[in-house]
Length: 176
Image 1 (cartoon, rainbow, N blue to C red):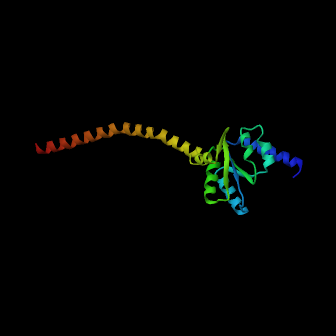
Image 2 (cartoon, one colour; image 1 turned 180 degrees about the vertical axis):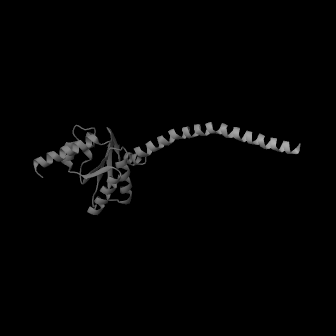
């Protein structure tokens, strides 16, 4: 890799760090190409990214970003998972690490907050941004449904009262 390619890689990583809400740092010792491809596919499905990185270049790319504190994690065979959604990359990484002991979570950062491996695992258990949005819409719609039911109830009760009076009146008229 020549100097220009390295500059471009550092610049691309710097842009990725600038746009990401979450960065997870992992070791991938012994993973096969097929396993890496599988993990990348799962990341793409979750709208996240997974990239094997060169430690020195990644530390250069971290400079000036909110993730500068992660620089110490970049030793050995490291890779990063990152996403715009504050939960997506953590969720896929933790799920994959449970089924593959070759992937080890070292830590990460959510915005400017540094997280250890336990923090990443806790973050992975939170609902995603889309799930939270769905819950919020459901909570907003529930009162509207209840209001519609309450507004319709008096009309239904009135119809039952009128019907009962009609039935009662019909029976009274026959008996007389």
